[in-house]
Length: 245
Image (cartoon, rainbow, N blue to C red; front, side, top):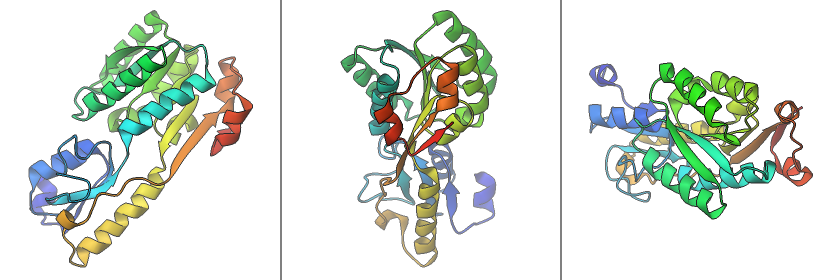
């Protein structure tokens, strides 16, 4: 980010909350547009949704609301679920609010949660070993760019250890995970381009309200369900935006 600021770019587009936070720490004058901020107010990126107030604006993920829905969908797909391991990156500032939502929703559904922190890629193998010993009913991945980059490893581990996986992005299901529910990231990127256009034409980020996502998608990997010995309820399959046969 310091290099970008040194180049005196007109706008910085940040694809994640950590990237947006790093950009804001590097400059308070160059406009910053975030594409997937999980909790823009809670993480301190903006003062409010309606009036960001600084040099940062963009499109949110509604992450706290989505994680609750993810647990509900997981329970619907795998009714026997009573214990879930949650993979979380403790270096992400917004994780605390997401975990609170996960744990509150889990309690209301009589599901026990165990949070395992993954701060670096080289910590994954140790976490995998701990999860295998813990033998939970399912694996739940929070929003995190580092884990997203290693989604294939996570999905492969889940299938190998007979764990239904719920994740926030369709790419996890495409990599072999059981289910994914979340914001349509392609739509967020298109809408972020609209912010860039307005800013280049003279608008100030402080005056551009943060937009909430409007497109969500549920993807189910039926091939993985078969490998796990699961039968996905027909009504849930009908609600899916895409299925992998």
